[in-house]
Amino acid sequence: GNSSDTFLLLRANHLGVSEIRIPLLWAFFNVVKTLSTMPFGALSDRIGRRSVMLAGWSVYVLTYIGFAHATSEIHVWLLFAFYGLFYGLTEGVEKAFVADIARPEERGGAFGWYNFAIRAGALPASLLFGAIWELASPKAAFLTGAAPALARLVGELDRLWPAAADRRPAAVVVAAEHPRPAAGSSPRTPSSTPPRKTACRTRRFSLVPRLSSPSPTRLPPAVVRSASQCR
Image (cartoon, rainbow, N blue to C red; front, side, top):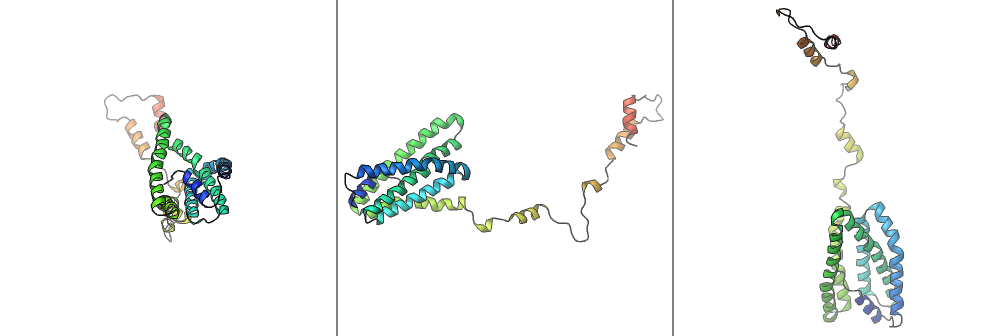
């Protein structure tokens, strides 16, 4: 999971970034993060939140793997730039995603639970990361930190890009919904079908009084005109 960013600064110091340049490195990270937040937020409005968030977690996985294998200070600066892109891809977009799926009257509570989940998950992730750092190596700690995000990405692939075998071309869908008539038969159109007069005839016979009735009823003029139109 996403452990404390302090481990990244500690790794940078181990790879040659002096204590004097650590604040400059952190400022550089924040500049990249700030400049990338707005364009990636606008991108999520066009292509969807989930795609942008998964792209961000892909950058996270690559960044942690990079920190595991980094060997020089230039690697650190490049990786911090990638880490800033991760925040630009995910921080604002995740909050917009929470606003999208929450009901308007429940958004305050939804944001509260969202922030609580992030803080609650960061503590055990940081404890585990530090334990692996001390008991094994920084490389093992960073690879372990990348593993959960990589597993989540693999699990989301089927939802974003379904298998090609499950997709039908548009022409096949149209042909299935509108099959062609059999050979030798002519398609029937609504205009060629003769109109039915069953209801009209039934109404006409029901409106005409019996001649054998002892006192035939006189029909109103409107009813007579309606019955004469059905003949």
